[in-house]
Length: 165
Image 1 (cartoon, rainbow, N blue to C red):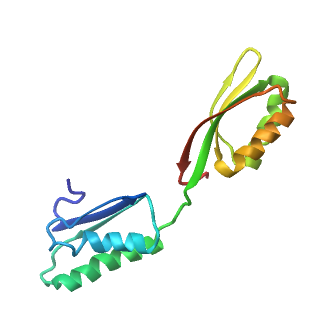
Image 2 (cartoon, one colour):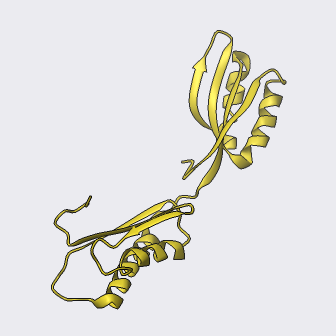
Image 3 (cartoon, one colour):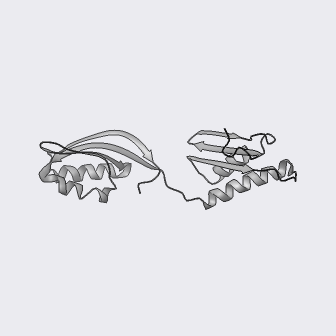
């Protein structure tokens, strides 16, 4: 499927962890997708897709020219693109009595906790949170102290996110 149907070539490359793919879309083999993938790897990017759209303008670039054009455009775009760090996250289910909830909630920002869900029950508040992995232990200790050991804390799944903004 092409993003711009009237373009001569829609070449792309992507990398997600150890998985990668590229496509030359009719250009000579190895002259478009592979140089774009090399640009991705050369800048240590991950979880990224690069698409270069080309219209034939009447001048044949040759294989070397195509490699330089596709690889160069991909590298330039990657240099200029905003980047977000990949942050390992731990999801946590925790709850406490209403009397402790404001104090607990006031600490969320300090530990970069994102509220994924919040439920108000008959006796207290339950949160489903996502925390940076390096903040989990410290927040668990703070949570235990703030609730005087009476709160509920359970680690859920570990995942990751591009940004905590």
